[in-house]
Amino acid sequence: MAYVITDDCTACGTCIDECPVEAISEGDIYKIDPDLCTDCGACADVCPVEAIHPE
Image (cartoon, rainbow, N blue to C red; front, side):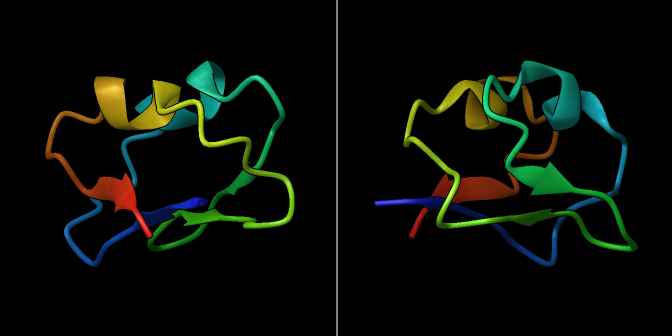
């Protein structure tokens, strides 16, 4: 199950450096590629606004 980034995302960039498989892409709201996501949860652990959740 991949993680998703909700509309609560502030595009702070904290999650990008934590993703070991580079599944997160930048934008107004960041996105996680479900085909690359390994469900490790590293991004969710560091999100300061808790905008990342399991799908």
